[in-house]
Image (cartoon, rainbow, N blue to C red; front, side, top):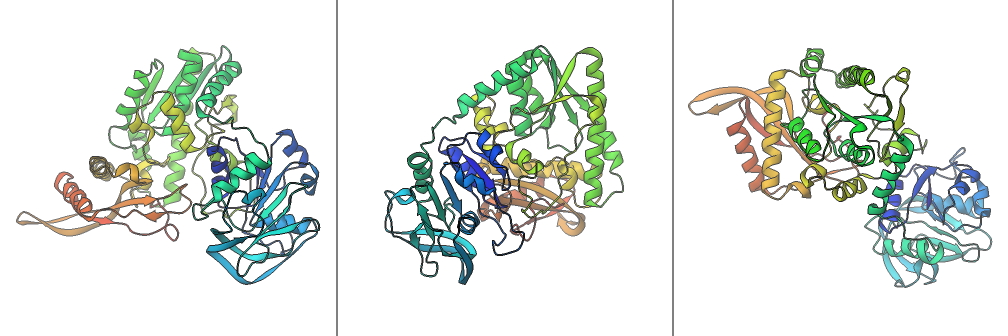
Length: 509
């Protein structure tokens, strides 16, 4: 399936829903040419939602020739409206805006609504609506304030819906997508992770030939799975470089190195650069400056390691743990999406002349984990919570020092350990401790203390774009607080952050 992205926050969710149903999905920019779309030979096309209004001058439009390809098309929300506008219908401002759950009344229980009830709950997010369907289209569903909540031209296999089938709030959304994929598009269920892993290994063998590959290991899931796939393809011609920045979690280097070696890695190079990173961060308090220093220092250290490898081996490829959302965003698939935060990742200088190898470039995070499980990687490493590239450097608010790193590393380890022991860790999308640059008065024994504050963060999310704070059992929170203060010297106060994203970000810097 091709998904044309008009800037929707749910475009990736649409793609994941399609993949979960066994069909590969590829996201393209909304203005991808008809030739670019046709080249992929899709069974169908989905037009995503988006934040713009089709009534605005210069609002995003697809190549109108896609409607003449003879391929089934489903327009969702903005996609529904833009389809109507292009094909001769009329879009207008709604008398009332619909946001959230609404009751949909189905007029035609066929096509998308085959096998569904006449009344059902769906999820809306719109202000405009289709006032008049295009010629040849019939209304197929409505709500109390949206007469054309869905329309269809069954002969041309063109369908539009004002609501979002991909979100869980739309009760029968998955069934609607199944109807579109399999009844209308006749798509094949041929997207299976086990087969995908085999195909990736075969592609690596074909691409790399007899050359050598270097991969950077960060301790995260993506680089670990990428390295393991490449190792299965080329064996000891893979050279893994793990830079110990001093900003990693407790025992991270030891655990990841042990896992790689257990899987047969011989050429694993662990570089101790802790002093260099911490030294360059001395006195720096601005978050963006810290990110840049960490990024540039990493590239410098990694580049030196690569040059050493080049002296000994004919290295031609640099492997990266890029996953599908990274690739889509870096290619600016949707220039209409709102930009919230700049990315901290840096690329190595082109003068090194490496070809880039990205074995995970077509996979989402959950798919990467499933591939890792199929490869036999440890469950506790695969299901680690997301960890930022700059590491603990941005979980210490203000200046990063060796003392603060030691305190935070220990507090974070205690926190995560208690979550695991309580069976809470895998219920949470991301949890971590942060150190605040203030000291408060406390009492321990018979004496006063003046020590740091640790803030605990735990959030529930799907993709990190928005997040809610995790409802932690109070007795568990109390135990975590007591254990941190009892075991970690330098801390006398623990806080629990209950701020949502937005308005806050998940990380502190």
